[in-house]
Image (cartoon, rainbow, N blue to C red; front, side, top):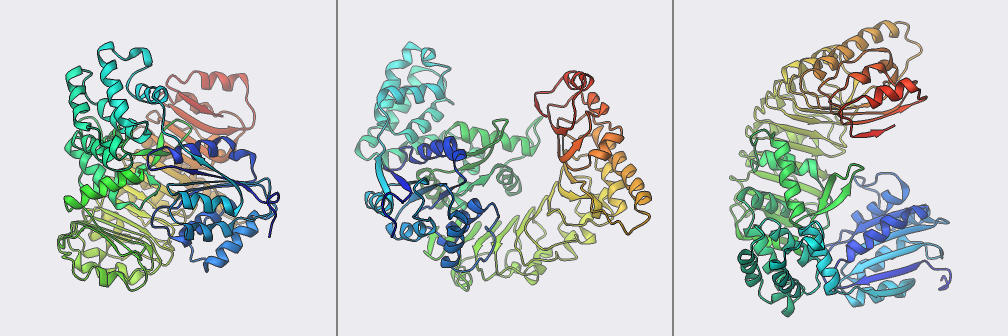
Length: 625
């Protein structure tokens, strides 16, 4: 047994929900993780799946993706994590631990003989905090509510440009509202998000103040927050209420990807094209409004300060789920805890999560499935129900379903109203040949499958807007028929038929394109130069056609030789990323990109003329050189 001096140091942050434990832990994590050799941040949640947690730790500390593997037992995973961390200085945050038993298993993954390593845990429960600290060389940090000075700073920062900008006629009412928030950051953020959408008039703010009551003072953890969240919810326009309720399908502490969430909103029919905005652009506005109101929290932020993913605070998720149940919006079955979030038998949207093998058929046996519009199955060994029972499906999501096989997909071709199809399963190797019958399909996502060729009939999908596939997938001839396409990712050019390279330029509505131009050289083939020259000309011609139509974003892996030698015409392009490839110098054609806002590429040498070329781009906002 390691002595106290040999053990990692641990701090356990304890306090009730909404106090900012996760925010504090994440702030420290982001600031100092670079000082360590290995680091990981993981959320445990109130219904922990130990295998998922251990796979997450192993993925983060090893740098390999184990999220979709069936990697042995708990003991095997713990052993692999120990091996990865042994003799290394590591920093780990374990967020939101809700019981001692879970911690007893998780702690075994961390070598106890690394005195220079650090662990932070967060919990709402004192006994859990004491257990964490007794395991290693630890201390408990009791997080406190904000004092009035800091409460005021948080409140004003979200509502006004600075403290001085708070009008004098609103100062007294602001103080009253803050007193009722009782120093709870989540409450302050939620109420300021509500007030930000209300005119800065004293009588309207008084109405909000009166509506809050003094519930937070009586019970700072539940009742008061629910009151504030109810006010925020009923202040939302109808389309935003629907978008918010949809978040109830995600597991607690999930990282919710913005792009995928917006695509699902579109497929469900919650949002549409609005004036000058496309449906997706309007979806981004909805996402940002929920962020600004404090109803969702940013998780991943890119170098441009764009929020690429979000999470939902546990307390807010509880509220969303309660509203979802009230309105029979989503029926969620969570196993092995056998939680049923909705008692209505007539189901609109069905979500099966973490189901053990053989349980799913029993769980849905008493449900009326004829009106189901959305089916989400994920994280478990599922007994896949026959898709014949779901004739009116608009959205079908099958992710991390280890029991999913090709024969389960046969009846997909009968789902004539299907708009959104996402398949993420290592046992799927082909799609049904007649998938072209799905005339309403708008979004197709294939990730982490063994599919290597798309069926020939897929080009008949006239409404398909977005295709995201694994990079090894080959497209059939006839891509030019898919005129509705706006997004196409991730395509390996070297394995595509010549027809694809020519037809690509005819996709007049394509806005976002991601290509892999890295070549697999075969030195034994004598005529590769001739074939390569023809394919090169076809590729350049297609890109130039797209660049004068609607192409806005182009991401390319490799291909610097191609684009250095050729002259590209891409006047509509706003975003250009070229990765895994070095240019000998800045290509002259880049000087014609008059609408380009973001440019990222690698250049071997930079001359004065190159700087002049880049400096003359009139719209450029971000340059990564």
